[in-house]
Length: 255
Ligand code: PEP
Image (cartoon, rainbow, N blue to C red):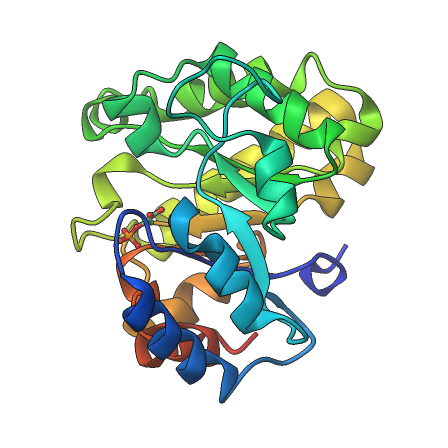
């Protein structure tokens, strides 16, 4: 089945960057040129900017994502954000299990699974991040690592829940480092993920799941990566922080 039958995504993860004025400027630039209808563009601003971003993109084809959420809907969880709050702010997507969350905030596969379950209950589409460290790749354990990260989430979900998840393959050694996986390394892993989905859950899920690549994507590598059959778009950090760079990634990819 051809990749054009899946949704392509360009998701901008602003991380802990940009203030209100910068966000306004960025979105003004993005709205001036966006987008074709053959792909979806999703912005993941810091929580405090979400209402502003939601207002600014209202009525356009731009979509809103949380960068994270908690695994409960409400209660005594100081400092956390509920999926209900994301929904109220206008988010229809949420990044889960980003390697920075796993590394700096000790998020386990179990917690990632719990977050995905509650997001799906709230009709928010999870963008499940998986990826290996440099050491794991060098020890040839990268496929095993990704399989464990995926199966710890997918195994407990129903068929219809599995069908809603977007996967983002982000080799940790390529995030924010300027190093990119070669298009061959990336497409090999994307094919591994799709083959695993097919052999574990069937072709329908495998062919229908959008698998994004993340890790120092920029206009100079977007075309080669996006040309690969199993790469359905990008999760972009650094290059999503100004409109020119982010739009260039989309344009260069040829989506
Ligand atoms: C990311 O934040 O998921 C990411 C891939 O960042 P960068 O594009 O800066 O490597």
